[in-house]
Amino acid sequence: MQLPKRDLPWPIAWEGVAEIARSEGCRLTAYRDVVGVPTIGWGRTRDVVMGMKQTQAEADADLLHELQVLADEVRACLTQPASASELGAMVSLAYNIGMGWRGTKRPKGAKDGFRQSTVLRAHNHGDRAAAARAFALWNKAGGQVVNGLVARRAREAALYLTPAADDLNAAAALARSWGAGVPEALEPSAPATPEAEAESTLKRSPIAQSGVVSIATGVLAAASGLSSELRQVADGLGVNPLLVVAAVALGVGAVVIAQRWKQRREGWA
View 1: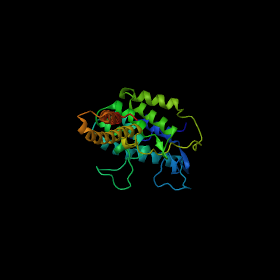
View 2: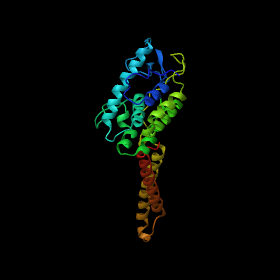
View 3: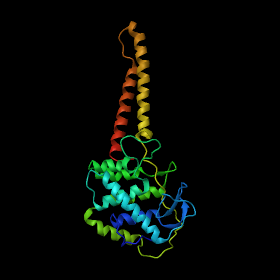
View 4: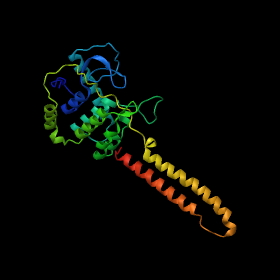
């Protein structure tokens, strides 16, 4: 497949560049991606209008500039060192999802991106396994899971986990497997993978929601049980069965939410 010129001064390992190129493809006339965003070149969406055209050299130069900026921004977010493979994978993710907003308070209308990702948090905690799993959390566009994004996140996770000593070999293997150097049309018909939406929050997790329902059920049962118990005081100190139901529901709900929170912190979808 068509790849950018390898001899340009790429700021990340070549396998990261190749992954972005493979996922994005290169089209020299502006088009709309699967969710309608005007796109050109190697997946560029910034300042793109329909009808825009590029040369191949301009598309490669665009990609080089974007990756230089992104690599610096990703490095600035890291509190733990990153190997060439890890950095390449994280820059590939950031290229697709954006860097997100800065600071501790979300500006109105701002979109989440790499700075808000579980990938970054897990990497900075030194949990590489959790960071690799968390790539898969960014798999939706237009509110739906997109197969192209699922596959891209899996490749980025695999790249992230590539041992540093094998970077050059991995780069060569990736290039060979994707047909580097094989002439093809510069404007493939297959669309680029779309920009991914933010990873789903714990609040929107069906599993966590079921925990909240369990707790709510427990609270309601407890209230009903206590009222019933009060009505039975005159007949003696009995244990209302609803209190047992309430205790179980509260306990189950709390355990479900705690476990789901732990899973998300560890990068599980």
